[in-house]
Image 1 (cartoon, rainbow, N blue to C red):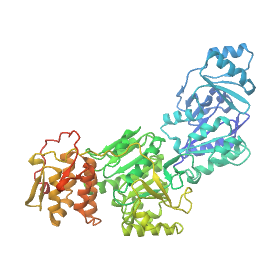
Image 2: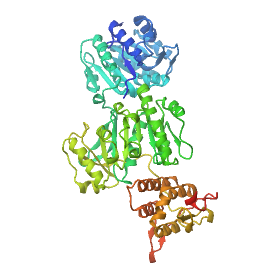
Image 3: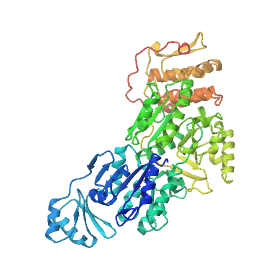
Image 4: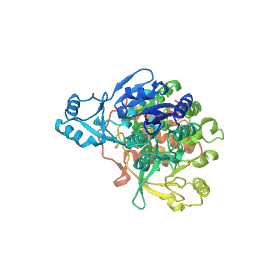
Length: 603
């Protein structure tokens, strides 16, 4: 993760007795010069902070009153909750309690907590108490430093996932938890240190100044210290939940076609999106469109042309947005050409802004098999998730850069050999070939290399997804098409058979077609285009297009069997008496009456 935001508690962290440490002030100026936004997050009343710290324009924003009041360097400010209760203040005065009232917070000595609580109960006020060393803060419900920082960064169009927070006391727990890296100072609360990702040694604010300069020198959050935000993958063989930290690591998901790779990828994307990470999914075959049901996700492409790169860049500058780029309708060469421009642009945006947090490239072997991958990807960003059924075709340098590898069922001998080479490089752990080839659709193996695995291969059962694939139930199996909508088997010049006016007829003629006819149709992607244009079943068309591409690249020999299996599974064929195919119909949707090319092979 790129380091883009520094969130600092004030008293006890960067200030002693209310006075801002001069070395910290200098360090703040230095990191801001590198483009890092700095936010003071304090329990102090805003006017009081101005009195002790002076002009606040040495930072980009202030979250005051423990999260209730926001101030920005451009002069804009606002409250995040209702103002201080006049009734509460009057009752405090009547009981002789000393207090300081801000716009939304009331501050008292900690010893006044029992009396303040009694007033809150008597008046039935929606207020809570929060301790900060020897002081007590009374706040409206749901107000916290973490909530205030999120609102401040949303206004600045920045993400907490690019932020480091540093604090010292009880009221900093939520602040540290909100940020990607939470740091507690060694001279502060013991419990805060136990909860933090990192403990900053030293005895005062001067140590904070040195730490700020240190982390700013890399401009990337240290991945080995990030661990509180996690992805839940499934259940390990010993029954425990298998989770991995969302560190800035490059990851790879490999396995046979239709082994469930997109399920694993979608599961990880769902959790990243719901945790507020920005994800960009490059989807060559339309497998991830259902992610659009999640908040902040927009899908481009599909039946529309792929997005123009400047338009896409504008969307990706919003940290609360995720994007799926559906290239399923683009011809193969157009996909290649588009990716040659898209991937360098994504790397450049991420180097500059830290967004998107995760770049997912499905069918990675189509785009990343040449040694020039360094021109397309910036692997030092630790931002990529690659998905492929042709692991051996990826550039060797690219394979070696993958820190997290998840394997689904694998039966291809060449792929197995490549996996064994990877395992040998990771310490000699091995997986029996029988285990690799027999993994169920719900099973996967996490290879060694992460803190969570050590030197072991972990087999696990995947958790369910929120946005699962939706399969059709026998809609068009026997529905009669118009003649001009049917599929004609041709040799590129003359008609050989057809038209197939139902899917049953299509499969029957497919079995009879000669190899040369099949080669021609597959190379022109006629089969997938017919399914998409006539039936509008783009999910099935996407799967058939993958088969056509594998066949064209020489990675598949059983073209007829593969297409027949896809159609059969999609529409739930079942063999009946006499060898006939039977199916239970749901209500069939109407098929487009728009004429389809009578000779698909000549289209």
